[in-house]
Image 1 (tube, rainbow, N blue to C red):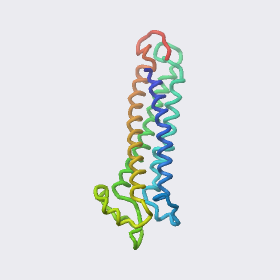
Image 2: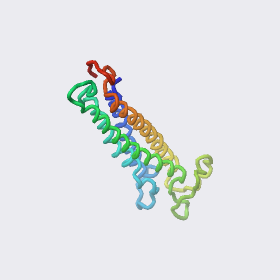
Image 3: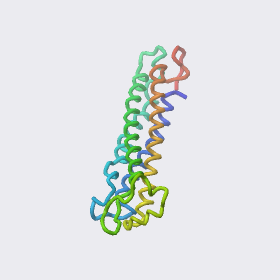
Image 4: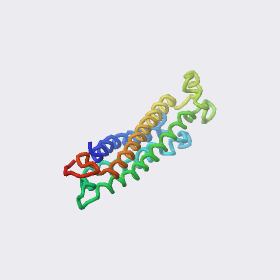
Length: 201
């Protein structure tokens, strides 16, 4: 497969992941599916916008760049006048790095949120009743959160999804870094390789 075709496949995969991460982050603003009357009752990590910014907005740009790579001039390394493909593949490495940073940010925020646990009402005030992820292996501690109802499985599910999807994005962007390096050094088309011969994608 040409490196441009590979990049297009990665871009097609990244876009739905970015949309899902954005939706997951939005849902986290409604703990347990409820609308909070006070924004201070929402878990702090939700306000870091890991899913919306890191794995959402910042991931759209690399995805669109990857999608457009296959439409650039082919086989710039084979003696043709245009070397636009190599430059495009080099540019994709930069955008892949941006995607890595965005997805990495979401991954870290989600991991911290899962370890810290949600902010909830313990019957007296709003605070974080858990520490060091102790509630993850002991569901009897969930009773410490009186409200919002189902806040723990809600946060646990959504932040876990963000963790998994951002992890996948990190892998896909890392693949494009390698793919981009190959495309920059050897050109896009495997039919041309680094030497000669005519071919198209």
